Image (cartoon, rainbow, N blue to C red; front, side):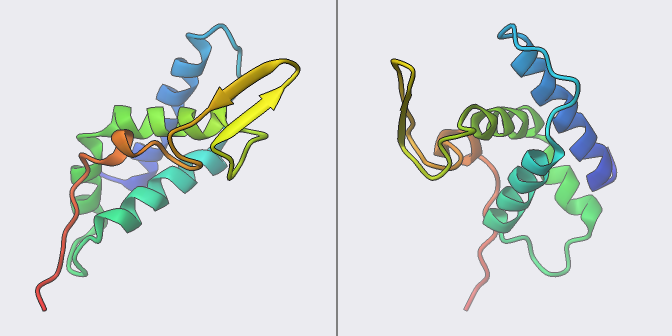
Length: 115
């Protein structure tokens, strides 16, 4: 992959596939979730200013399945945004995080500048 758009399309398609493996049918995975996850991870990586989009995509594509699972993580929490537990119609769920589960994104690089 060379562009962020290609990565976004891949992550969206993979997230849709993961959701459909649970038996739920989706026409299309919500792109707003994919955009949020990629932006969240990019911001957490603290890429150096000299990095081009191609450099960022190169680093991110090594974890493209993790990006897709992070999208599914957010998708599964629909209706429970900002909560670490949610109950509805006798079904209770609890989450490690109110956003993206840390284990899904912990292996992405974190570039730290030198002071």
